[in-house]
Image (cartoon, rainbow, N blue to C red; front, side, top):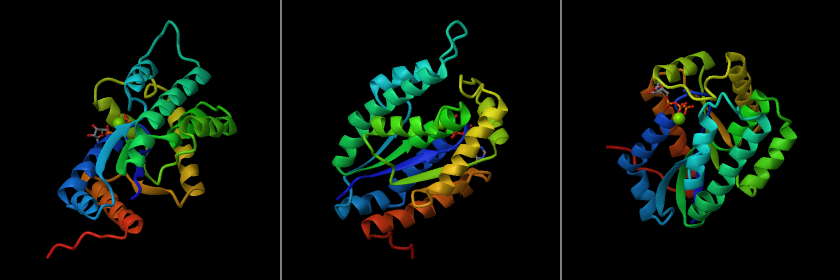
Length: 229
Ligand SMILES: Nc1ncnc2c1ncn2[C@@H]1O[C@H](COP(=O)(O)OP(=O)(O)OP(=O)(O)O)[C@@H](O)[C@H]1O
Ligand SMILES: [Mg+2]
């Protein structure tokens, strides 16, 4: 059958990485993965991220996230480096894995570019959409989970992590514009983007995501997990 691409999106510290890992673990432990494999729906579960889902991407990620005071990255250069990471990721990982019937969980994808470089930095949205099309060769996510969290809460969570990267260091109004970008995308593409209230304890957010994943997997593959006795 066909592979599917599930993306986790949202502002800094929204819980994308945490929830992606929890979803991976839950798909394995709940029996979903085994069920999908035994019915011939998918061959494997793959987790990946942007930027940094390939060897080239890992180097680009480092360039994008480290702070250089001597030669700060200009906005258009930043946009193009993200696009290079994405093109490499699509051709090297996402397309081959989807063609080989993988279920993919991906940390950030095209909506982040629209939100950060478009709404956040103010680069023309038409240009960004064109660039996203070039970088992805028109590969869209099948489902995007937008972890919607208050910006200040997200930033304070990331600050507790200790190191703060170049993009996290941008001012609060930048992150608020990014947040508005995600909100606009979610209302524009309701068939693809599901809003998850991330202002809740981790386990509650995870339950909401699990319910959403169960619903979409059943819809895609026509199978469902037997309810526990
Ligand atoms: N629901 C939650 N409640 C409280 N803390 C949380 C919750 N979810 C995640 N955290 C914590 O917040 C921090 C940020 O979470 P995480 O790294 O998953 O976010 P992220 O969206 O991947 O961030 P980034 O945008 O920086 O990659 C982590 O320390 C994590 O343990
Ligand atoms: Mg993360």
